[in-house]
Length: 264
Ligand SMILES: [Zn+2]
Image (cartoon, rainbow, N blue to C red; front, side, top):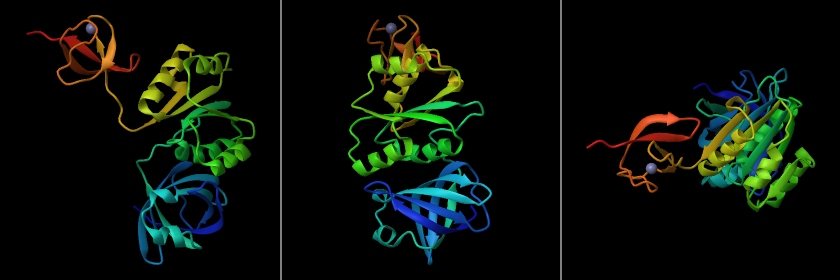
């Protein structure tokens, strides 16, 4: 992967561990609107460190970089970075928390403390495209500094909640206009639950983008009694006690693998 040189224009500490840097690419540009940097190199040092980026001006080759220093064990990186010039290498595999669609007018994002970092570049991306956004953050965000930053970026369009309750989420999702999309991030069980609620409120697959963290719990749909349960070894349906043969067939509608009745 190619190394690309950039120059630091401005830096700001937006959270207890999070830095936001404004950089200008020297020659080559970064490949996406919103992506991830895998390694940074300066003065002969190379660091594997996740940095997220968002393009703010294509013409002027300007980007914002987001760096979480708590994810680094290297004191050199913490103490001396960023310096004026450094090289970036992209992580091609990264999928952003949200990719804007052509007809997006409004994006509602559900986030938690763990997925907050991935949301930061998306906020700037949506701002640059003049897409209205509303963020619901679950859990107690312990970092007051980042809260101040979010409030500044989004004014009154960020709401903090202790947890996402289905009644509250349904009331948020009902009555939204056409052109409203959803960005759902967080741990997989929460993401799956929110997606289910969104579908029941009439949102289509195309209008919902999900990004989960941590293990994705596999669920199995019992073809005998139609219940959905967590996958276990030697799957036996907890509801009807049928022995199930779990197939590779994943139902997107049910968010579960189909479990057929085992034939002796
Ligand atoms: Zn069953």
